Image (cartoon, rainbow, N blue to C red; front, side, top):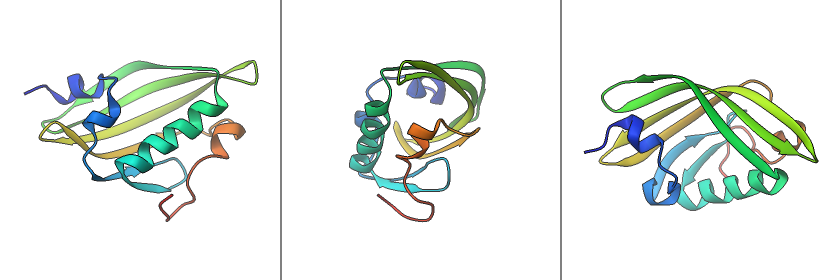
Amino acid sequence: MPTPRELTGREALRALLPPQLEYVRPGGGTLRTADEVIDQYEREWAVMSSSRVEVRELFESDDGIVAEVTIGATINGRSRSVEAAPAHRWVAGRLIRNRLYADPLPAEVWAVQPPAGTSR
C-alpha cells in the first residue's frame, strides 16, 4: 500500500476522493463530497492562469501528512504566493480529511472560498 506521502503527491485527485469526506478550506468552509471538492478547485483554477505548489517540509504519520508549502499562482498577470500547511488523512488509499491552513489568500482566490460553517 502506498504511503501517505506517495498518495498526496498523486495528480488524480478525484480518483483519490471517497464519495463522502471532510475538506476544510481557508476560512472554515467545509466541502463534504468529491463533486464539491472538484467544483471548488475548478473555481480556484478559473481565477489563476497558472499555479504550483512547492513542498518545503513534509511530516508523515501512519495515516497522514502535514506539509509546509508555498503556493504560487499567476492571477490577472501578476505572480502571487501564499504560505500554507495542508494536513491530509488517508484511509484505504482515499483522502478522507483535508484541512488547509493558509496565510491570507489573494482576494481573487478568497472570493471563491465556501463560506465558514457551510457546504457549497
